[in-house]
Length: 344
Image 1: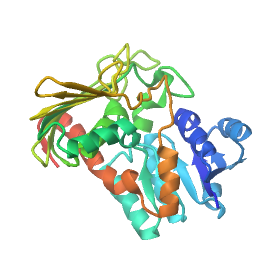
Image 2 (image 1 turned 60 degrees about the vertical axis):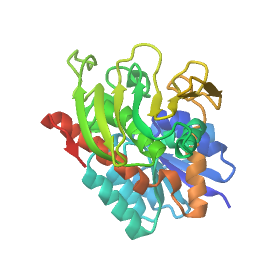
Image 3 (image 1 turned 180 degrees about the horizontal axis):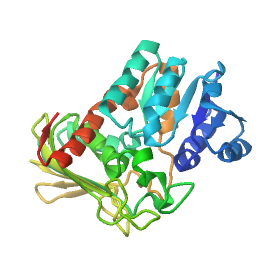
């Protein structure tokens, strides 16, 4: 029997990723949609089928809906997720999980108390290249890992919105709470946690607003660049850079440096994974191309969530596995504000 999925929020991420992917999944059926601007929900219903709900509460009260996907603005994640969990729905929530550590923990408490699943859409854990890289690192392909650098930068979220331009909600402190650190930085912090199978213990960070302006021409109220120095519990140290001011090709690369070689991930324009041995040897693995804002491919999110609904195991996207990355994000914000390293 197919799992019936409710979509809460029909913005750009839902339109280009969640809705098409769940619609195409053979074991899923989109039950319906809710969006504050009703016309967007109606458009999705006309294209993919399913009903339009007048409110979130109406969707959550529908006993035929098995689970919901929450893709609202950041500040709504915790409240809506908790309400959905308490109503008996399994939840897939967009990243960032929430805007405070207390909210994240309240979401996890609600999941435990309700016995429902809570997954967070940290899709970089699911790419075939990152999965292969993790296996190679664990097998000792580059020896003992010493350092890393990971980057996620593009020209900004102005076009990544159903209302494109400088008025995007990503630039609003009220709706986003955080800027590029929570939009792109959380992906790479979570990825390092996943690749190295180790938690971040210390964070030094500088968050800045360097170039982005709002409709009034004034600097936006959230960060557009974030630079972090990270220490892992296994002793590895490295850097993470997130930026909305890379006005050219998108950079979503990660480089891992070990005692016996270097692993370059999505760093080469041709080869998605390159292993450079300490002896100078080079091996290329052309697994796939990573998706970008301009080149969307299937993320694996729908497959992971539907699989979890049947297995009752949150897997790689479970909130428990994502929480350490959120702790590091909040530590980075605090570090930048206080001008010192923060121990988690």
